[in-house]
Length: 159
Image 1 (cartoon, rainbow, N blue to C red):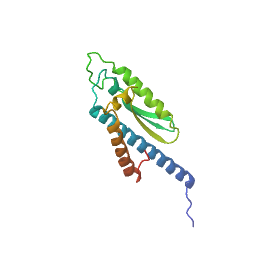
Image 2: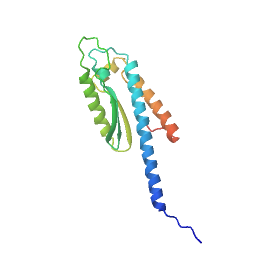
Image 3: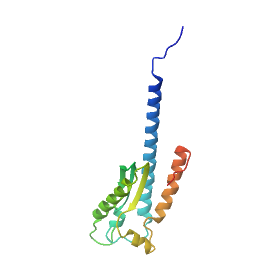
Image 4: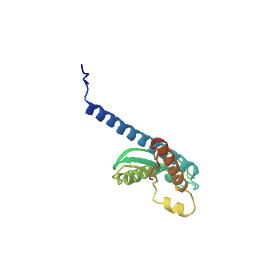
């Protein structure tokens, strides 16, 4: 007397593989989003410059993309900063920051990418004047990403 399986082994393997791939995607997205959130928090709290219009801090945010498609973004808050002026227009910064992050993230056509920006075109000038806009943030984001990826996958992230 024999026992015959009433299931297709190939279908079981396909379903298990599909689930494993979905799990990896979820972990990657969640980890990169967490790093992005922390990066924005650090950039806003530790940025050593004084807001004039509120746009530079408002333009700070991140985008996560997979194979060139943006799958998430956050930050880009028009109310993120206190301005030295009575009227501030953080909406301009928020829009420019998000547009820049999406543009850069979309250019990475292979794998995952986390893009953190301070999207105003004068951000580099502020950094050159010895103010911290994203320098400290970048270093900390790399460390955090490596820690999270190492815990999740047993290997550091190539970023």
